[in-house]
Amino acid sequence: MIKIPVSEDQRYEIEAIYWKWLSRYHLGEFLSVVEADTDLKELIVKDGEDRETALRKYLLSDSDKLAQIKSAVDRRGTKLNKKTADYLRARYKNYRDSQAAKVASVLGLTACPYCNQNHINAGYGRKGKFRFWGDLDHFYGKNAYPEMAVCLYNLIPVCKVCNLIKSFQKTGIVNPYDCKTESGIKFKTEFDETFDLDYLQGKSQNFNIVIDKSGLSEEDKREIELFDLENRHRQLKRNVQEIIVKSRAYDQIYEKSLKEEFELSDSELSAYIFGYTENHLDRVLSKFNHDIMKEFRC
Image: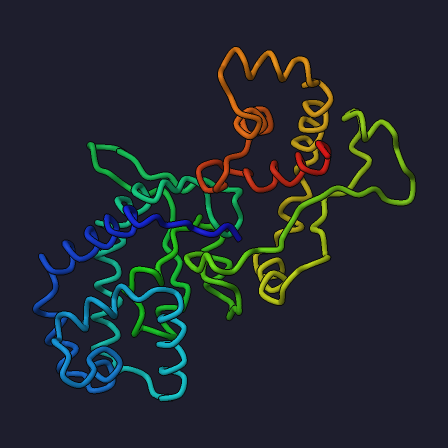
């Protein structure tokens, strides 16, 4: 999984987008729904707290707070009434259709944080409408936890493939907005029984693409299994061959001339040559390309 890094400026902007949408079109009705549903009100409004302030804080809960909300819902053991749950899911649909593209654009997301293989671009489509070519995954599912159906940081911009995969399974993975937890997933190559020197020259596909099993957390293992990451990357041997060839073709003299001509740092040049970026979310396969590059540039 690729974490979604959110700067202070980005956080301010996406939360402003979210609250402008909610306060302009839905705030009054939303507060009435909260007031009428004892269970939902208990989750959102604390003693003596202003209802609007409490609602804003709740809907903009970070990944840690969302986990606490989930625990509170699990302890309670009862579900929201159908009318409330339907209302919250309907507000999610409003948000997805009108605001998801704006948020994805501010965050600069163009690659899925779950697989890093598929595009999730936001941009202008037919008839000049600004749209989102991706899906929103409810990190905590909207059917099991309708209480969080419209919480901003429970809505993860992802590709349609990963959203479909995750929607049918319970998970114990890490929320991509939780940047405190580092992923231990790293791709590498290995050969079977026969070592083929041509493989090290980029001339052979006599190797396998695997995930390094050392240093994986339990969350990493669940993520690999859930999204079938190893099998989904096994077919990228052509990409590996290109990286191997580039690692041999770009010698120190050639790299020095390129850095001087284009005024690039070492890290910038490597990123351009091997096809990755620093945060991996504005280029598909950035994480994979980076891992393989590190293997052959040591």
